[in-house]
Image (cartoon, rainbow, N blue to C red; front, side):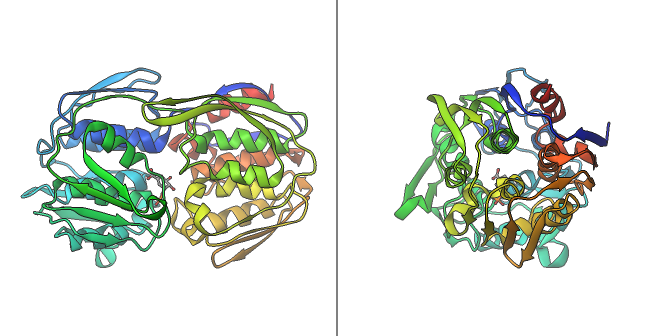
Length: 436
Ligand code: S3P
């Protein structure tokens, strides 16, 4: 493993790239395929650390998931809703919040079975009470460090009853956990979010035949009823817009660049970055739009734009670009004017405190960034000098710093760069390909 990457500033980006499969959809395909009846075929799976953690945990629960090879379509033979078994071992979720939170929801209603979930140092510091507390309203018995808020988490599978739950944060992980629990509960479960988060779980459950409906203004009430059989499906996973974002922003801000990113998922709950690119005045177009397996996709062609404008991010758009804040912080450094990011306190409980870490690392290049409780203020038109920066073990920080290094004068070093394997193992090869 090469943990230090060296990047020479000044190279432009040119070429065509196909980003790896969507991380959120990859987790859900494994989980829902495992509890469906019959076969689920999965194509375009993200072969990276996080979804592989989900696969590993599900196998320990008895799921029939084969050894997954990169770029290979595979088949899961589903166990049905009641087929999961009590594992003999602790379930290790690695660095993956999605794995831990979705499994908490899936396992809370497995009556009479006991489960222990743990993760790496970062995951075991992230808040789990946001899932455990609403699950206990449904009858879940969830325990953990710090009054149940932190892993290791122990679950005593119990009979659940559906109820109406308002979540305090717009989090797809929380919503998805409650919907998976709702499949096992008696009666109806309604989840009401303060703003709409990504809806891949709803789409996939519906495609598998679950009794799920969206009600209310802006689709914020999701209603699930137990009883319907989930039937295995063929799932074609599109490229991850959160991975494409690095190339979309890089091609916009690095002079003389032109990149075509192919086969990108364009689910409207994920495309907040395109709204921001419009505000910035980026030069992009979307080609080959289509719908595949219930998810909109397209290719995005981006060319360098001059005189990019600063932008503000706040309110309901946050969940639609939550994972893109690190790379948008880099973008803001090269816009005219001052950018303000507000309402982004969720960033503090991601794989790292991304507000603090991005400010700390980008300042090493010469960026002018100040940190607020809930966001960042970034002064544009920076002149970056080369620096030795550190991902601090966060995959999206690592890749954002790589793009920042392209705009620095001289050669920069990124420490703990291979954190990127959590979501984009071929990132460095793709960077080399585009900058050649
Ligand atoms: C995810 C939801 C988001 C996102 C994460 C993946 C998912 O987290 O940041 O990378 O797959 O549901 P929250 O739902 O906690 O905001």
